[in-house]
Image (cartoon, rainbow over all chains, first blue to last red; front, side):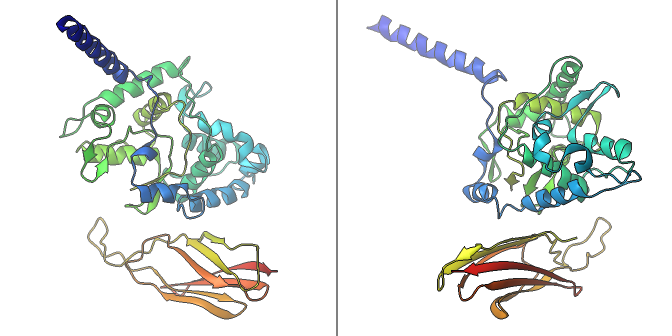
Length: 260
Length: 106
């Protein structure tokens, strides 16, 4: 009997040990931030009409057809009347741009099109039109799975992103992973800590009353741990974005998500 | 440029109650905040909202600084005759944003 109990206990311990290992592994199925929000916000996000982020999606749809720049071209002139034709493309950023030798996220892809094809001035990061276009593309890819390119030249970018994710910083000396991996589901003030997934971005933040890009969210996290935030569009933020895409592979895109 | 969303059923039965939903993009700056340099940010809110159905007022509302940005409003009306439903938001600076929806009563 004792032997039985002992072996039983041993099995339990082993199970615990293996699940412990499994949890430390980044191949466990990712969980969307939607699972961690209050019911009211979840309802607001899932209501296609009332979701305030849809205002930016609508604006993005207008901008898609609006000609701009010296070439007097609109996005639609090259890419078709409806963005959904290219919807899959939005799910797969950041990608490596071989011609430029650097990773390019959706925001910089839009601006490259503007400067090179449309011969228009680039849109400022976090400006209303850039947020609107980004939200429009990501919304067109809604329900598709997040995909990440981590082959070839992107391998190094994703690896750098992981370093950024694990790098302690700021007066609080915390890395992203200390909240978003080691303390997921616990309470931080009145909120539950999510996995820090990027599938809902750009996201409408009720407390800021506006749509925010992923990089602005990074800045807010940096500020919250008393670290100096990097510039929007910084290489390390793009790398972190690539790592998060890799980490969230398989999650459905939910843009525009609604968060507190 | 103001983005507005309106949802009105395209057809509705005579005498029936139907829901109207509205959402408008607006900062609703309360006038009680200061900028990074400590200067007060001037108030800029939507002051009044009016909805009319074939010229008859359905709802009118005075809004105040505590209303959140991008205000959402949903309300009900009773179907009378086919026609147009008009929406108007008045800004502090006098700007009027208008939107019209048509409804078919069967």
